[in-house]
Image 1 (tube, one colour):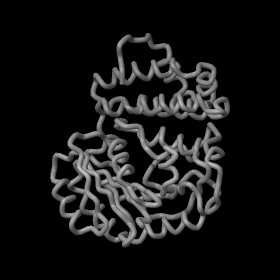
Image 2: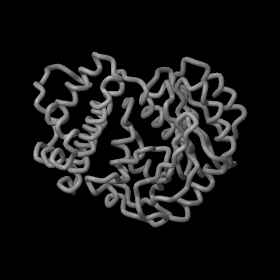
Image 3: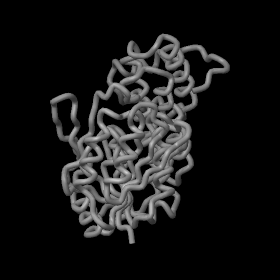
Image 4: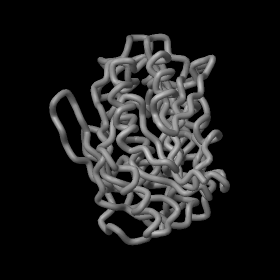
Length: 325
């Protein structure tokens, strides 16, 4: 039986894929499988993965004929996975040797639906540790109780899919798949769904994932229209949270987070191409008008003056017809 399935999407990462694959090899075990999803790469990545299919123990190579984005690539891996547990890694990141066996041992000891871990963020030569914003470690918790408070960073704000491990029962309950086609912020509806609907989780102080920031091909570095998918992602968060049995309690957190993300993008709008910047303003204004207005008023009142002023000004922007994300 396969104990752990590791899902690793790759797209045009020939510079980084060898490091990623070497780190997987240093985590291999006879009951682990590595599902390598080539999301229609156009550089040297396919050749690197073809060699890995032969040389990496447990490798399973899947190729997309069309580029579908990270969410769709992860879903392909989930559908192919056979493991009792699943986890993720991105094709430009890497792992410490022996990290996956320690991660698997931690969730088996705790017996919860999913486990969240800290990680190391790497920008050029700089390294910094980023912690799961959960105070209690190594104890099983109720995921719903980790969503709030609205005005502080919580576990739903730490949305990295690769910073954790997930029991197969989450797949069977329809909780682990991502929204197909989302090209950015794909982790946001996903982490909210996990915290609303899973039964148990825990956070552990285990370091082993090295997250590479500043990669030129990463969408976080590219100011094109794909970045605007954050609006579709957060619209989904708002809609699903509004349908929750505790909507009145949870919506303030969802709305405030959405507002913070809109403000963040507006604050760095110069990195977008001019037509995309214009569309960002139009779509964001429409998003503000779609939110529950009483909840939005409370969220803006609770934010700092600079962000609140920016969003109130945008809220008054005249509506434009026929604009879609």
